[in-house]
Amino acid sequence: MVKKPLLAARHSALLVAVALTVLGATLIWWHSPRWWLLAAPALCATALGTYDVFQRRHAILRNYPLLGRARFLLERIRPEIQQYFIERDFDGRPYDRDVRDAVYQRAKGLEAKLAFGTDRDVYGDGHEFLVPSMAPRKVSATPPTVRVGGPHCPQPYDMPLLNISAMSFGSLSSNAVLALNKGARRGGFAHDTGEGGISEYHLRHGGDLIWEIGTGYFGCRTPEGDFDPVAFAANAALPSVKAVLLKLSQGAKPGIGGMLPGSKVDAEIAGIRGVRQGRTVLSPPHHRQCSTPRALVRFVARLRELADGKPVGIKFCVGDRVQVLALCKAMLAEGVSPDFIVVDGAEGGTGAAPLEFADHVGMPLTEGLMTVHNALVGVGLRDWVRVGASGKIATGADIVRRLAQGADFTNAARSMMFALGCIQAQACHTNACPVGVATQDPRRTRALDVDDKAERVRRYQAATVHSAQQLIASMGLTDPWQLRPRMLHRRVGPGGEIRSYAELYEWLEDKQLLNGPPWSWQADWDAANPDLFT
Image 1 (cartoon, rainbow, N blue to C red):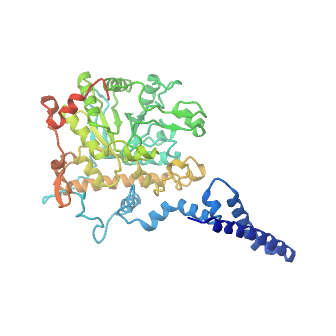
Image 2 (image 1 turned 135 degrees about the vertical axis):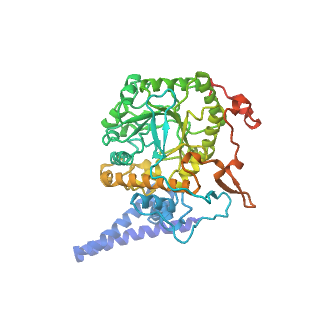
């Protein structure tokens, strides 16, 4: 605690400094005007210090003029200091340096290899590893795909193992969207549009699109904010649109809608989203068209009909098992199911979110993915509904882990941003992205070269999928869908016990929920209501 006499002395010293500076500046001017080159900085510093003492907004500046500004500067560059000089290669958040470097190297077409052994504590609690085979297989020359589209879908789509996850134009710059889509076209993988609608930048290069529709219905929206079937059918008919994804919630902020300030709604954004220019756009937290599980599956059937049989999926961050089971019961009751479900982990993503939601709401991807997979298996629908995993997918090992936990394919957003040149500055929501990825500032956007970054995206996706194929072959498997929970192990407990995912978690058998749920699922199964999410 600073004593009053000390503060008074500091203020007195500042006043003396002001007087001496003014007197010195006068004498310098009298002697020679050229001395102002030295006097001007001192005079400016004195003026700034005087302002600090008399301003009322920052207490620290009133008590520590000028010096307090050094604190603010250090606080501003703290993330960079942490990232570049303090954190170890394997403990950074949300992505550590080893992972970022692997993405950068693969995007550049270089080998992402590690010398002298791993830095990770392989004996630490929670360490996971895959099980290699003593009879490994040859790596397939063809990247695998999975057919998305159930019995009611005459236009199925072959989904690659790794795709670009949801990132809207508006959140990303035009050049970033162009580069991602051009990379997807070159590499033959899918590009999720995000809920901000289909822009000209999504269409220019003709890459495969997964058109995501959120609660704002951007791209298929009436002036009042309701769903417009005519506009939906027109956009769904675009040749680039290979599937439609209805977003219920996202991992970064499950349970709340988004807001686009009116200052950002220029003529271009307004035209793409079907809203009025200059007006703040609020996305409600729920869909007006489907507030119950039964209404949701009926809406999915309607969208598939309007899309002329293209696959229609749903995306959500899992809350609890009862809601997932309620959705499954609605599918059975209506005889309708989505063609695919994308499970978004609560690990978050590129979307900015309130701290409380990012840290404390929603189920992490591991548990959410296994919940959805088991529920579909238990009601006999797993063969018809494909499951995608979205949440911190960056390496081949990430892909293999998620496939072993029940996914058919994976989506990645932040690692694709790394491929574009993102440096994890975590300034996505400030419009001041230093590399032109997550900004609408034209001066920053111009730094992102579309052709160069498109090739980086293509190389990264191809190298990561190939890495996953190598891992799968080393496990003695010929295709990704032979992966099972018993092939992924984790070190658990203080004694260092090693157990497989088949032992750590319960896995249902086909139609087990219909034939007689196990006691651990019985209460949730009984509570699930196809006419209520809660």
